[in-house]
Amino acid sequence: MDHFQIIHGGRYGAKSRSSVFVLAVLALSPLAWANSGTPLMWAGILHLLFGNTLIGIGEGLLLARLFELPKAKSILVMIPANYFSAWLGMFVISEWIVPMLPMDLNNGLRWLWSMVFLAYCMTLASEWPFIAWCFRGRKNWLGRSVLASFAVQSASYVLLFGWYWLPSGASLFTNTTIVAAAELPLPNSVTVYYIDPDDGNAYSRPLTGGTAQKVYDLGSTSRGDVLFLRRNPSDSNRWDLAARLETGDYKNPRFEVIKTNLSIEAAPRFQIYSADPRQSEERWFNFGEAPELGAHQESPWKFQVNFWAGEGLLTINKKTGERFHFAYETPFVSWRVRNAVHLPSDIALFQLGDEQICAFDPVTKRLALLWHGQAPMPVIENTDVADEGNAKPTASDK
Image (cartoon, rainbow, N blue to C red; front, side, top):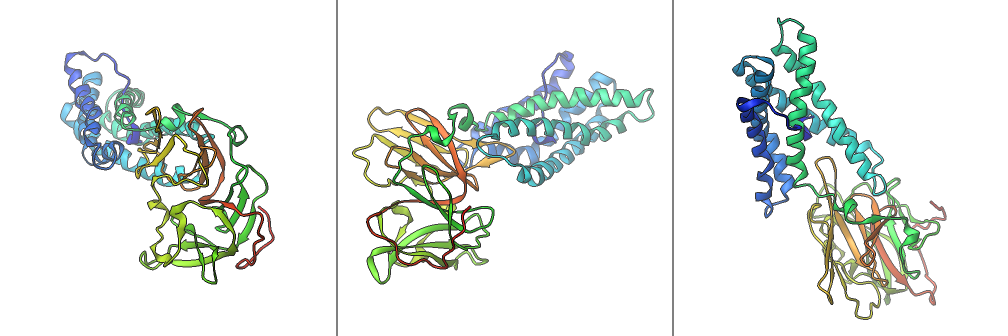
């Protein structure tokens, strides 16, 4: 709706430029809010709370100028029209439509532009009755109101598009090359444990492919649930794979042991807890510098995960000083980067959004969606020692 709404310029004469100026002011302010949250967050807040008043004034002046309608009446009608369409668009598109879309790394950019077009169409539909009311009692009111709606909404949509585009971040798609997982130099020695988003159970699979094996009927229901390792209480040389599950009380999560007596050669340090498992954090706090998995032989690369979706993943070459960044934060959907791990082959493994397990090659700037999953736990298991004992084992494949 007015969720993404502005104008494609046009020449309306000296008096009508005042309406365009009122809307254009909105396209500059988000950049001043970079140190508190993200610019896009503030752009949305300012738009929903105050921006619609300015947009309504601008549209009302434009409507009056182009179609010879009373200024005061047009402004008083277009202000509530913009608030109505903006809030309706936020709930219908962001809260209802977007969660139902099969959106991921391989199609996210196409869906983004589809949402931009849908928002424009919803703006036309939701604000047309307000504009039609301004034409009531006039000759050919229907045709003129439709034309006025296209003219005014197209104008404001272009400006509002710029208001949101400037602070948005889609460098995930523009700065990287999306490829198939087989095109990345993934290490053969890594096994990944994760939570499947479809059934909430714990699975494992080789990083380089193969069949996913269910290892535990976990029944996870929260996107904040994570997997972690802890020392086996009976054998300090062995490890137990466990899950931290969210409950109604944040301070008292539930813990489930998934697999016991694992012989682990290497695991990410932030996912290892040798004492009280209550010190483990839910997934949203697994950010910062990506821990290394296994031997890296003085790797020049470092991966840094930041908290906000708009800050994404930062790659730094410690020898050359090269810095490379990508992120995905738009008005319709944002994907945070979490659970990043620096793999032995200088590949970053991480979770993108709620359920995408991805890998990134900093040398070629190639990015791949490996599979859908949550809370990836990559480990290098000691294949010379057999595992003994699973908690609630299963034999099903996924």
